[in-house]
Image (spheres, rainbow, N blue to C red):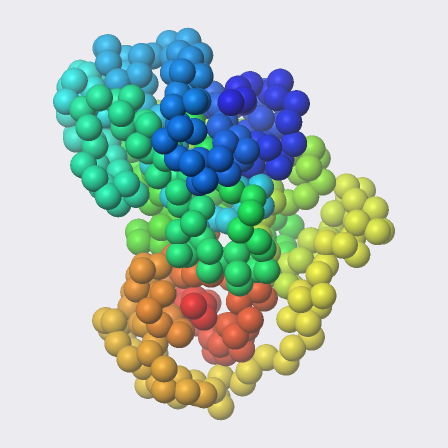
Length: 421
């Protein structure tokens, strides 16, 4: 059990990618909510022997929750200033959207009333609704009134999500083994749904689709992070944050530039704005298209952040293959009837085989997983609604998807996104 206070001297393999990124940001005094990490070693033990492992760590979990209370001047599950937490997975190698997360954990009747008194009744109801929905989906049960029982069940469920069908399929797709397990990060909640000056978003310091040297991301006023990445709601381009909260935007861009210098890579940052205050929740190396991988490696080399050998290592053989692959001519591949004006779930034409195709305005992973191909519009740039990765860009790792994406983008339909699942 490791405090992520900027002093942790543990590797990414121990803390997981998320925990390691949080500790790096805390070490450099970036605005990050306090958090602690239950390590990947514990995650492996839990999968082999759940109840004894949880019993063995539980006293330390309670002790670490006391530390979070002291750091935030709040009390978990009680009091006039209640502390709520997020419980997030954190594998050594990032697997965005493949494992489970629980937000707003710690809500019960008394906490809802306290939140209503401290802010508004609408905020309190919305926060509890979000928690109940997510908790039931992840754990398969209704949350207990006891916040520590919620926490115990939630930690176990997130550890178990390492073996969820989508996580196992993701690892198989990328040629990763099943041995590493996941860490769990418990972090104090901040709320993008609190006031009119609140929201959530995702930012990459440079464009991970085109490789352009410009900020790229999404902003959702009044939303939480799970809204932004779900692909189920309309989001705004990150430039909207600049117009609405310019000081917050400037602070965010400066943090992204600082992380570039610290990591010698293009960071992707998940952030929340709570009543005008910026909080960085996590950071990782931005996933990127094949074309962007080449351009960004050259830019980082030009900026002196990486050397020649590192530049070559940043461009994988798969990326080179994707860049060299000829695009598919949409005149030959896609008849106009493929693009319906209204997009209910439907079986649609596919050029090579009559397999099921999922088409709708928003695509949930659960629906996409039953199809061999999916199309959806519009596509939030940072969503991972379409498995195996985010719906935002032509990931070369999705092997059969490259042709279809080329056809869609060549047809001048940039708001359409596609991924083979």
